[in-house]
Image 1 (cartoon, rainbow, N blue to C red):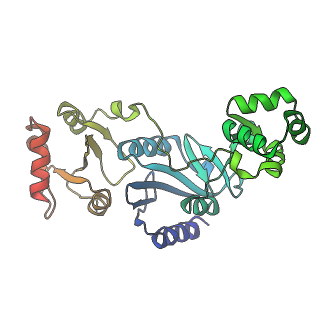
Image 2: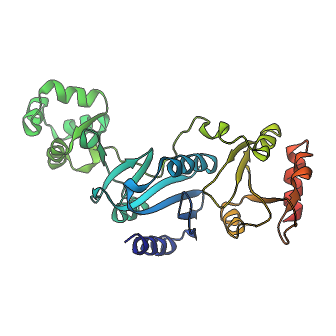
Image 3: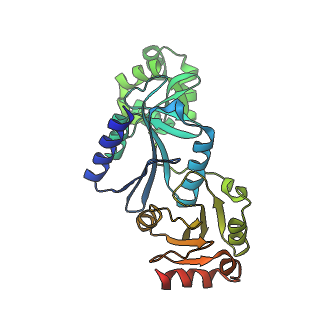
Length: 291
């Protein structure tokens, strides 16, 4: 099931004009980019299968890249419903139909929460729609099945309501009064990745003024960022073949820090040479001139 979903998702993204890189393993399976929008997508038969380790690293890498981490799956224990947004370990999860609609700018407004399926009302649009149609608070309260005071609360402050009440609201006003879920929004990590990994390379990057994240489930071992400069670093003598296409898709620099044999046709240096750098600009200049 996941293999078929993977293929269909990849083909859809290509048809929609995304650059796509498929990865065989790791915290995300598809890296896609269109303009400034970057997507990190984990494709699963069951969204519940994602581990905290994978989800955490996916969120952190997305933070560095200003990317949108997503899980596209068929089920999460039970089948995922169309046009409903779920969440697993801080990442939006949805089925392929919902994802396709969102790409085509038809964002869902129903979310699955601990309280069940809910929709979020836009208080201003609700008030404007009610007044425009000449519907009184009392009349609307009867139609929806809540008190007049509750309608006043809905109009005073954005609120979540059950799908049953949302359905009644939609019968009166349509979908415009609901706040859409932007599945492509970037999670705010508050520097979550800053303290991750105490490896020598990551620590050196931080001394040079970069943010740096040591990773385990990506095509690179360290991602470092300073301003608009992003460096993907592979540490070891066996170069990950995905680091070059991934860096190109992201417009990022790449670096291999080797221990024995220097790789060809890719910016590389020994760890000793890397640790000798005193200025970030010098390192970036070396990468640009070597690439």
